[in-house]
Image 1 (tube, rainbow, N blue to C red):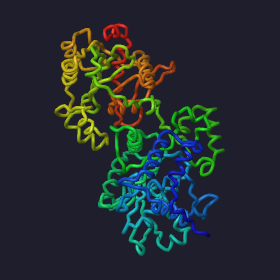
Image 2 (cartoon, rainbow, N blue to C red):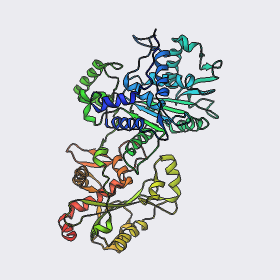
Image 3 (cartoon, rainbow, N blue to C red):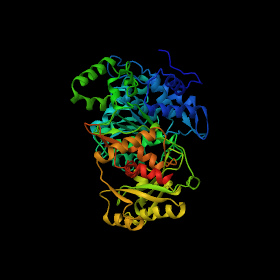
Image 4 (cartoon, rainbow, N blue to C red):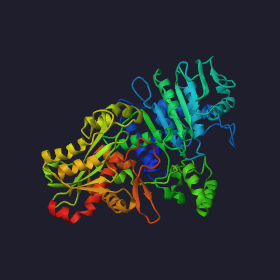
Length: 565
């Protein structure tokens, strides 16, 4: 058999991006934006640059030494598809001047039966044998032993079918040993293992994290275990699932924030985190065959098209099958809510100078919290001969909780505070007097007065009284949360956001809250905002505060416009 080699200038990232950009490959918005970024990185070297030598090395390792273990192709060499080549090249190809990889953690979320376990096995074996690391420790990790063994067993079968690998790896009952080659080991590892402490991990493989319950603890152990290595790798593969507010939602949320942060200068940044998300952009796309590849890049080759088409046909005839289908095959998380708006609809980078606009009257909205959530106060206003709606907001978080929230939630609250988008209040609870003081501050410093202020009907009585005493009883209006009150204003807000009529001064906190917002829809198409089942760290408080202000704007529009003119 001829040995597979790639030209020194081969770059599958650029090849894949060209196929995406030209429409030859159909991908979702997240994949499109991520590979647009990677293609830019590959052609604009900086601290990290693309090395074809390093990227080609892993591709040649996979195709020369790894063999398929199951199915009709069992025993035959692996032949990577373009999307797989681009995926592996992205992870291993970007290095710094010392040769250390840029990617330290990669997440691949893809529909079932697209070969993600095969990719994980290749990554594990490469990190064991081909990465040049002395004494590498590689672990296939899961909360249950049987699950942890899936990738490890696949890797073991690969070794047994390859004479080259067998010369370097000794397959044992619960370990792949490279004692005579580089002192490396590759083991399955579960939460109930006795060896969780003192790990010196070069690579942690985490498969099907959507099945993990209480998975954060295990993830943290692995993340702590890689700190002693120069260029470790945590490699996560999964489909969507039904377990909410656990490690899957946390990593998906982080991946989404990294992608959104590519085009938002104030957004979340982590250059060492590489997210690869294949999913439908909208739930309803599951009936459109042209969209299926968004979640299934291996469709028609790795994954059987006829089988998927039959599953879709059955689900169209039986609605009870739809949830499982869209979750497993198309990576739509099973939830009673739908995403409200896309990032493109939300994103508006226009800024303004309130001192130049000189608004006279504004309309407020408040979303209060005590400890866990954020507190947000909103002021929206209009100015003469301008149909745009300007948004001014402030957020608060208890000072004693700040460090913990930044560390555990991986949300840049500290950076937002530094930039003036958020403030702290003393202690571990929110004090609502700071909200009152902020509105008074706008009045004193910017000469903008509260005309009306929508306050959640469940808000603290003393806060409502303080607002009335400060700004007048007629100013404060209780907004009761429900579809009857919120549906119309929320639809209007959504339309205005899409038209870029809402100018929120490129506030990253509001942008984040808007991205987190799902929508609860009833049979009459009435809507209200919802957190959805996307994890406890995904706050929507800024959206809720803005919507309360929008309720008041809709209710008092004519009178307000006459005042603002």
